Image (cartoon, rainbow, N blue to C red; front, side, top):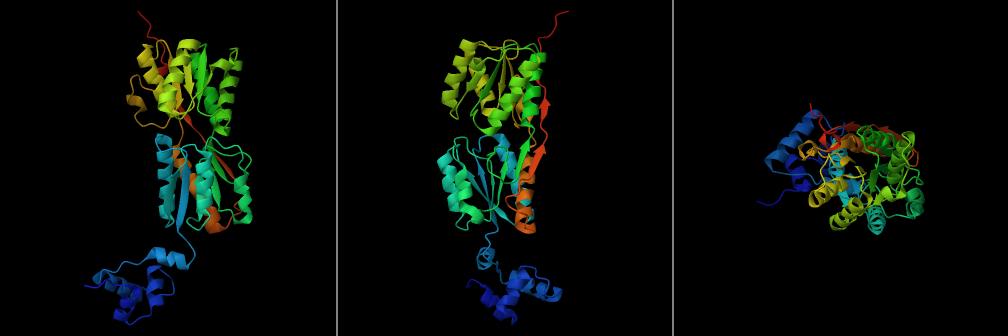
Length: 341
């Protein structure tokens, strides 16, 4: 049987192709009875409308791009889930681009997307950027852009973030309250806005409790598990911390592995707290104390800000900032030793 296209369907119903097309777009100028007749015949003939071609004619891709530094981090997987849910509710699809924290990849992705592939972008920025002005070089033609989690402070565009300073302050204070006096802060890129904000919370909590800040206890790590294994083992051997605060999930895992290899007991010898949205954190041995961000909600809010620009024609350069709250979930990795009776 020959494939059915819109022209053949129109001939079978003795209607124009434009009427068929408007019926599938659910236009209000087509009567309910006509829509039912068209849909019934389409089902009978196994006709599937080509929405992509229709979108091209309307000069709309019905697609938004999501740019993230990585997918291995459970946080970004949850955020993407939230973005996709909102996009689907609005009749859009998402395209996912992963920068691997590579600034040049980010620049290339953004340039590629301005060819009409997407109508807007939701992005958590890369960790290597120095000059963000490439985003402004598009001028008025720049696609609607919403930052989430990791942002460029000098680019005026809507963003969704969490209370990182306060969360880091409370995380550090929790370690101090558990008896830690020599706390290492592990970060992947301390020059990025989110790294600086979290580090400042750590520094201020130390100051509140009259603990002298030691620059050597800031451990600048990498995106490589192999490199982090060497960096963290060296830090634990040389710095002898009694507490570790990791700014990202992967550094908590690397710390657990390093402690296992070095025979360091968590939490007896070293207490560990980390930013993490990992659902299996309670199942680790010992269970990991986390600062948990509302990752799915962050994705949803970022997508909603984008659709306010796309649908409600809000100013795409208006600096709208949504701040969501993270929470500390205390588990065994920061527990005090059990008292002997």
